Structure formats: structure tokens, C-alpha cells
Amino acid sequence: MPRAAAGVRISSIPKVALPSRRPDVEISPSRTAEVGGARVRRALPQRAHRTVGAWCFADHMGPIPASSDDPMAVGPHPHTGIHTVTWLLEGALLHRDSLGSEQVVRPGELNVMTAGGAVSHAEEPVDGYSGALHGIQLWVAQPEVTRHGDAGFEHHAAQPEIDLAHGRASVLVGSVDGVVSPAVHDTPLVGVDLEVRAGVVTVPLEPMFEHCMVVLEGSAVVDGQVVAPGALAYLGLGRDELTVASNGSARLLVLGGEPFESPLVMWWNFVGRSRQEIVEAVTAWNAGADRFGETGSSMARIPAPVPPWSTEGPESAPSDQGAATGDDRPRDDEESPTDTV
Image (tube, rainbow, N blue to C red):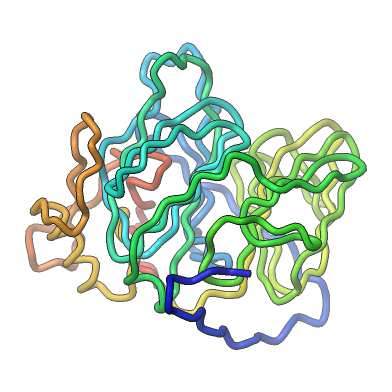
């Protein structure tokens, strides 16, 4: 079951009408960005799908080869209104945050940081590690009842798994077929790492959820369509199972949840409900306000770009400085419903 902050009950989300037939698979290319010294494929947000359930951001980073002279690293930066979820297939990263957390994450381990009203963190290379880096950074939007609450951090050393005839499923968030992840989430949600080994696998899905799929390695076939790294496969609402095939081997994430409660306003690392909220967060971070705390990192603090609608300063757009940890936002040529640029 999803968990809320102490004393807060998760709000119910109105049920939606399910389609009368299985929805078509919609495949959209990811956006390419260079952030934190590494090239990433940004699968979410998309113009057509700003959120999938409460999932609102997905950066597929790497693989970055071991010979890279400029390892991924990002200095202290803020977040509001989200959970960040870090999952690696290869390599290691050191997480430091304003709560005093200092935690290395490696393949098979899960880091989940809750921003609530405000938090800051840094992602650093791990001393002594010079190998490749490959993984994904995800954001989950918090609902109204928890997004102003306390920040938090969780590290899960091992994830519950389901053995399949031609693969394996690791449950990162939520539950699949009665197997439950201990990771925090504030709305009905699921996140699964699915490994397919030269064959066909089928996993049950919650039909009240909308789902999507991001392939991290290899290629997979869903409903006759081939999905490879660098794309988002939107699976729609109303599916009660997912069947995936691969001729070789494939690694992919299945993300889903009940359609999110309200439109988001997203700018840089801040997720809110109004432009004024974003302006206040930008101003507080750039002024060094106590709201976001200190990470203890020796790396340089990253200033927040001023949104174009702000009256606090001249218009500017976010640069590609940042990281797969969500330090820059995708830029659109026109204003989007979520004000993401």
C-alpha cells in the first residue's frame, strides 16, 4: 500500500472509465540532453504524456564507458514536490543530501529521496570506482496531501523479485502479483525492472493504472512493435497484463499508476501547481535560504535559472548543465500545459 506522511491520508483519485479494448502502443522518441557530464535519453515528460500515473520524469543515463575522463557528477541542487528514484544497471554513485544522508547506490540497490516542501542533494563519483555507469533517474510527483511535508531518504539494498520462465522482475515501487516493494510512494503506483532472456514473459498489470515502458538494454517486442533504448512506449489505460518478447536479452522498466490528480507546473528541479510557487522556490534557492539546507558536498552549488514568467529578474532559459538526477528540464519551443521548458 502507498504510504503518506504521518497524520496524512492519501487522497482518493476518482476512478476513470476503462477502454473497451486493449489500447494501442504509442512509441515516442526520447529527448537527448547532455547533463552532469553525461548524455542522457529523456523519456518523460513528453508533449503527449506529461505524466504516467505520478511518474513525471525519466532520464536514461549511459552507458558511460569506463574510459570516460569526465564522470557523471552534479553539485548541490534543490527539489520540491517529488520523490527521486535512482536505479543503476552498472556502476556506482554517491548521494549526499541536506538531511545528512550519505549513501552509495549500486546495481540492485534503490535510492528514494522525498523532497516534500524542500530538499537539496548532490550526486558524486565514488572514490576508487573507475568503471562504466548505466542507469535511470526517475521522479514521482507528490500529491497535494504530502507535497508540502517533510523531506526524507530511503536506501533499499535488495528488491523483491519474481522469477519468470524467460526472465525476472524486480519490484521497485508498488506491487506486482502480490509481491510488494517497501519503497515509499504517496499515490497508487508501480515500477518494475523487467529482464527478458530470449523468449516471452508476461506480467500482470493493474487495469486502473496507465502504464509505459522504457527499454534500457537490448530490444523488446510489445503488441508487434519493437521498442529499443531512446524511446517511450506508452501502453495506455486498462491493460490487465503485459507480454514482452525478445530474441536475445532485454532490460526494461515498466512504470504505471492511477492518472495523476492535477496538472503540474515544472521548471528545472521544481515541481509545483502554480508559477508563483516556482518563482518562490527559485528565489529562495538562489538567495541561499535555509529552506533547502546544506548537503555537505564539496562540489559547487548549481544556481537555478529564472523562469521566463518571473518578475524577479530577466528572462532566461535553463542550460544543459545538470544531471540525470534531474538538474535540467526539457525545453519546448512553445509553452506546454505543464509550463515545462
